[in-house]
Image (tube, rainbow, N blue to C red):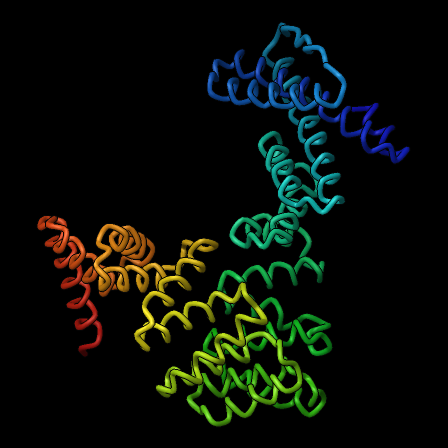
Length: 401
C-alpha cells in the first residue's frame, strides 16, 4: 500500500495500479484466513476467490505477488484486530483502483471496484458517494439511489449531491421526492435543465397548477426557453387544455426541434384525440431526436397497433424491452399483440413477465388466461381468470361508497 501511495503521488498510475492489486491479493488472503478461524466457510471461500482473481490480474501486469503469511494470532482480540486492519486496507486498495477507473471514464469498472471496497468495509470514507456517482454516470438509477442518498444524509449542505439525488429520484419516477429536493436549489431558475426537471416533477406528482404558476412567471423572463415552454405544455395537457398544450409545445419545437418531451407529448395528445397519423409522425420525430425515449417508443407501438401495423408495433416493443425489460405495460402490450398473431408461447413469456411486474393489473391476468387456454393449459388458465375476476371485484368495491 505504501508503494502504491508513493506511485500515486508521482503520478505513476500503472505502478500504483499494480501495487494496489498486489495489496488486494494479500488483503483478501488474510481475510480468507480470518474467516476460516471463525469457521465461516462461505466468507472464506468468497475472499479466497477474490484473491485468486486479483492474483491473475496482478500477474498479467508483470508481477507475481507472493502469498502473504497471515500468522496465527494467539488471542481472539489479535485476530479481530488483524481482520479489521485487513478490511480497511482492502477497502482502501479497491477504492483507489475504482478512482483510477473513474478518472479513465470507465464507470462500469469503477463501480465494480467500489462494490468490492464496500464488501470489505462499507463505511470507508467517500465510498458511498463514489459508488453512487459511478452508477449515476452509468445511468443505472436504481443502483445509484441508495449510495447517493446515504452520502447526502451525511452532507446535506452539498448542493451538487442534492441535485444528483433529485435527478436520480426523477429518473426512477419518484417525482414528489425529486420536486422537494429541487425546490430549494439556488440555481434552479437559471439552469434550463433544472427548470425542466423541476417542472415535470411538479406536474407528474399532481401539482400541475403550481407548475403553471411558477413557469408562467419564468416565461416572462425566458420567453426563448424551449424547456419552459415544454413544461407549460405538459401542465396544460395534464389539465386537459390540449389546444394550449399544443401551442406551447409547438413553440418549444420551433425554439429547439430536439427539445425533450415536446414531440412525445404532442404524439400523446394526438393519440387521445384519435389523430393517429399525426401522432405517429410526432412520435417518430421524438425518437429521431431521442432514440432512448422509452415513453415515445411505447406510445408509438400503441399507435401502430391501433393502425393495424402489428408487426411494426411488436418490433418497437422488442427494441424497448431489450434495454429495459422491467416495463410492465410494454410487456403486456407485446404479449397481447403476439397472442392475437397466434405466437402463443412467446406471448405467454411476455404476459407472465407483465403480471409479475404488475400483479394488480387485471387485464394482464385476463390475457395470460387466454394464452394458457389457447395452449391447452386449462388449470393455469382458470387460475388467471380467477385472479382477473378477483381484481375486477376489488376495484368495484373500492369505487362503491
